[in-house]
Image 1 (cartoon, rainbow, N blue to C red):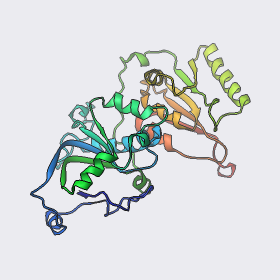
Image 2: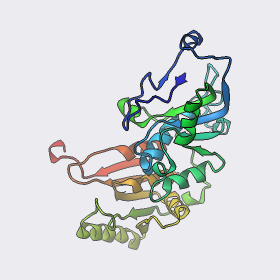
Image 3: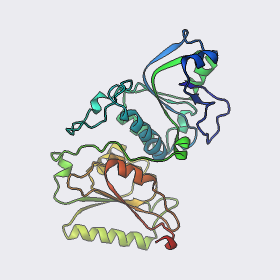
Image 4: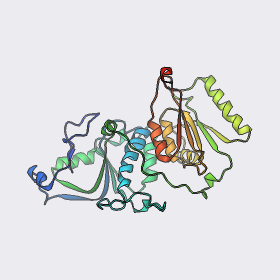
Length: 311
């Protein structure tokens, strides 16, 4: 594959031959590429080919990264093997430990301030999940282009959100195994977290609806049917505390919004009680977050949102 730093890259690009193209050795030579004089970039590299929507937790992590990770892990243990293995063997054992480690993330068309969101959740995710993997940005990518050198990446995964939206979707390959020994699944009562947006600038419940929901959830706790957490995250809250809270819950209730991306920290309940209840505003219907729930094997319910004529 030949990838360029095309000058006609727009804010909302379509992935086309001017950006990247698979060519044969002969075609590469016909393009004037000197294949015997290349600088090798060793290891495995993820390249994010977008400019927009990077500084949003869901769009970067929930869409771009998780989509690329699905592709990366789907070919597994040896990506050059003509008979690639699936993540789960027939005996149910995972071979995720055989995934080649990632050596670098490159945000080819963005500076750090276009990648890190105001709540610093993107930064927290990459620091937590890949603490040893360096991040590179537009300046480094542009320097490579300006050098006019030919670089050969040993292994590369290219994520392009806009092009992904132009294609179809598919079922997830992998649903993680759940251990019954995990203490978070030994609870006799499910843990329900309601993440409120009442202090948000927009997309909130009416105060009456919010109070009614809290009262209903608290009644479940009073009857001994569930443990209930009423939360409202702020940018200043420790991110590891947020992740830990979501990891312990079985049922997550909140309005449509970026906070729903926290469902990536959930561990599917061994007793099949895991569920997301997403409240959407009238006239709205989008299944963005349901895609992540599906990948985790968690039921996802969307409340409201649809046009009454569609019911």
